[in-house]
Amino acid sequence: MTWFAVTAVIGGCVAEEADVSIDESAEIVIPQAVLETAARNAYLKSRLAAMMSSGELGTPVPALGAALVVDGKIVASAVHGVRTWGQPEVAGSNDYFNMGSVGKVATGYLVAQMIAWNTPLPNGQTLTWSTKVFDVFPELAAYSHPAYVNTTVEQLLSHTSGMPGGPSREPDDQYASRYADIRLRRYAYVKDAIADTPVVVPGKYFYGGGSIIVAAMLERLVGFSWEKMMEMWVEPQLGMTNTGPGQAPYPPSNAFTTRHEKSANGTPIPWSPPPGSDLQANSPAGNLHGSINDMAKLASAFLVNSAHRPGNVPLATIQDAITMVPNGYTKAGWATGGAPWGGTSPILWKNGSDGKSKALICVSNVENFATVAAMSVDIGDAAPGTVHIAIAALQRHLATAGSYLRSKTIGAIATATGTGVATRAVDGDLNTEWKPGATSATLTLTLAGAIPLSELRIAEKGNHIQSFTLQGRFDTLFGTLWITIASGNAVGANYAASFSSVTTNQLRLIVNGNANMAIDEVWVF
Image (cartoon, rainbow, N blue to C red; front, side, top):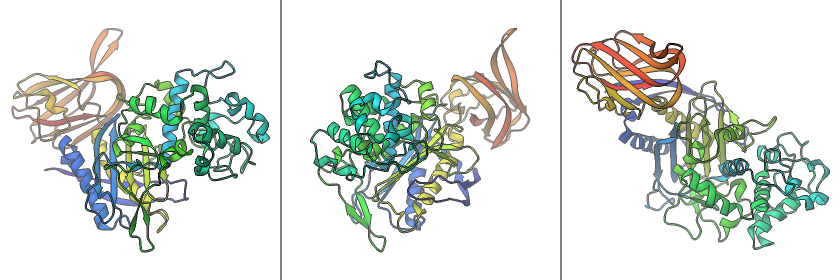
């Protein structure tokens, strides 16, 4: 079996809770077998197990989960560990993790949906990122600090409203004590929040609970609670079947990872949420639970270059949602920064923690993949930044494995001359092969759509190919023509070549050699 090595640098995908700079280099050797569909989950699970047993995390972790999304599809997902520390019950792939503030981008997606649907405002206009709080709550203007007169949806979601992290009157979780209806609790939150003195000048960054105010605005506009809107619109559209409000299901489900506090010596201590925690006023800002796969589906909704992006929100609306607001996050609540796996391309990222769990999502629209990781204890207090380094190390492994999986040819419609099975050249499995049984053969690939391409990789069994030509099909003044975009001689087990970027939906690979030619896989990026 052929192996390949990748050297990566971990960049600063940093939590809002601490100013932590991550800078670590390491060489990772990954077997090519990880590219085989059946092996991806097993490989990922083995990586999680190794991290937990080696002490790489710095302290015991009951359960750790991760997922990789490539071109909008979950291509690897695994959970390792136990549901409750000290108990034998093994954590499952659909078990719930607490998302924490990752829920803020779920609220951002809901806003994008309602903008796309032209949700009407009381003043006759429709909802936009520029809609002001008092366009929806005109009766509250008299209670507001003057600094918030022009506060908008995008300022609230990007943490640039100038408001404190939560109202000074009382902690946001305690709004449950005033009203039975969750919508009234959030309305009370809005009324108290707008009365506070700004902690920074509006337009400057200060991390807070603006998404709670935005949720209250949506509740006023359509009448449903945020929880009901998530249940009816976001979760079905994204295929999130194991997600719900609250820190974890209550009463406790038989499919969730218990959250854990940390003792003085680092040993996890099981902790269960109290009754009623699924109806806290702050849920839109960070009180969701969900499976690793559901978090991956949320991430995939923001992959703007994906051919398989889920949901019903138009691409232009999502592109607008991930636009950076000056001095803050994106309009939909994502932070941006360097990728944990290195490189110079910025990514979207969002983490969440409630002190008893940790989650992190990273979305690379440049490379068209996303990574997700979550654990059932927050180990950041014992050694600041350790949890971020550990999750970033995991993301690096995922991203390295994913570099081949993001090929645009995996699953393409394949036909070929000769006697071999053409689809075996693009099935993502190195144990299968396309063997045309001729000295010259042509493999034709039809992609999901017209896609920009600039790199070719071929894995050949043996050394029987003497030359190849890669052509694309293009519309020209002279009609539709096959035009050569790359060519070369001997291929071997791990051939790679770059070419000038072209956009096409059909490729043709012509190979010449002896009758024993066999191609394990063809990747085009």
